[in-house]
Image (cartoon, rainbow, N blue to C red):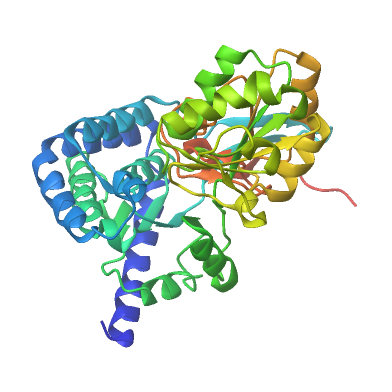
Length: 420
C-alpha cells in the first residue's frame, strides 16, 4: 500500500476511535458489561468462520517453530476459552467511577479522586490471535477505544475475531469503532501509529525484543511496555523435592511459547544430587533440552554446556538453561542481572529464604512454591490481560481493565472562593 494512502487510512482510523472513545466514556458500567457479553456471544456464533481463517494462517506458518505454531493455533476448545474469558471480563466490577480517595478541606471543598478511561489505546502484538479478543474486551470494559495491530502471522484469524467483536458491539448498541484494527500487515502502519499523538493516548506493545525496541525508540505516544519473559525458577536447598519436580515440569513445559514459561533454573550447590539431578532428568525425559554450567552438565550426558548468552535468552521452546548458585543472595543477583523483570519463582519450605527472595528480586511477579505459568491476568482474577507490564510507571504485572484507566479529581464547593 502506498504511503500517502496508508497515512490517510490511519488518520481516519484514529479519528473514528477518538469519536468512539468520547461516547464510551459516557456509558454506564452495565452497558459496557452487556457489550462485552454480546462480544462473547458473537465469538461463539462465529467459531466456524474464525477457525477457517485460522487454517489460512496456519497454512502460511509452516516455517514457524512448533511453539510459535501452538501460539497461533485455534481450536473449538480454545475459542470457547476465549469466549469464556470475555464473559469473565464482563462480570468484573466496573473500573470507572471508582472513588480512590475522598476528603474535605477546611475551606469546605469536597475532593474525590476517581478512575476514568485513558481514551484511545493502540496495541501492537504478535502471533497470538486470542489477544485480539482479550484486548478488545478489556478496552471496552474500561471505557477505552482501541486500535489493534496484530502480527502478520495471525492476520486472517485476528480479522475474523475482530469482525465478531464489532458485531457484538453493534448488537449491544455501542459504537463498533470502539474496536478497530490496522487494515494492513504493512510494517509502515506501525510507524504511522506511533506518531498519532492527536488521537492515541497510550501505546502498548506486546511481543519480542525487536518490536519493543522499535516502539520505545520511535513512539511519540506514551508507551506501556510488555518486555520479554526470561523467567526463572530457583530451587532452594530447602525445597520439597516432589513439589519441586511437579512445579518445574509445569513451569517449563505446560506451554513453552507463553511469556510466563520458565526459561532458566537455578539450583543451590548443596542440593546438586538431591534435587538437581532428578529435576533435570525429568525435563530431559520429557523431551526438554537442557543447557547448563559444568557442575550440572556432569550429572547427565544429555545436558549441553551453556554459553553466557543462554542466561539472558527467552527460548519460547522446549529448552531451558540451568546454573548452580551458592544461595539466595547469588540467585537474586543472577536474576536481577539476566532476567527481564517479568516473573520469577522460588521453591522452598524455608520462609526466611522466600521472604528474602521476595524482597530482593526486582520483577513484576514473584512466586513462592508455584509455577511461573500463573503469570496471566486470568489467573489473577482480572478476566484477561493486555500483557505483563515490566516497567514501573502506571502499571506493573498483569494489565487488566482496572489498569487501563487514569484518574480525575472531582471537587465540589458551595460558592466557595479562594481568599488572598
